[in-house]
Length: 283
Image (tube, rainbow, N blue to C red; front, top):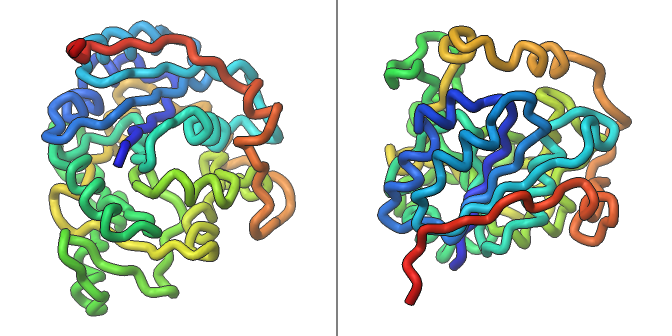
């Protein structure tokens, strides 16, 4: 199964140069078939940083440029994600925030799981840490999911995942994997549901309503170290985005009303492929 890693990013040049996210992707035991990075109108040198960081990748790297300053009804991470969903060619989408540090065996584990669970969304366990991978105490309780699974005796399957019961559906997160056809079936992020960080916070709910089963990773290979506020405060990142994410709720609640972006002239016009490069050997 072809696997596309997709990463939206904005004004994170120092993060890309640090190698936090890209180094473990370059070290994968089973590399992805492509990496797509969407530049959400950065006003720093994120483009050059991404190009420098990915130049040695042994798989194709595709860099998308969003062409609209404030596309759609909100300023949003939903739009970069939708453009990435549209441009990807893999059977599997592995979504990572640009401040997620993954395990080098992650892609192999995801391929194996989704080969046996063809209609599943797999949420990666998030450990919120500082830049030295030290846990941030009392910052975010998502790193307690493994304990919750054990306490509530959620069904655990081979491969180190637990099936989430219907009353514990996850809605949205920084790191997850799903067959691309399942994203296409719901039309990607629904802009009418954009709330926190201007994203469709019911994405997971809409996937499960459409027939996906929801699972959470319980083992190290299915986890990410997610940079918490200490790094971002140090580098003075995201203050404007954080203020905007606390803004108004955009639009009315529409349970399954996302745009059919793969047929949409608007989405096709919302980005262009700015750069494609690979170090893969020629056979």
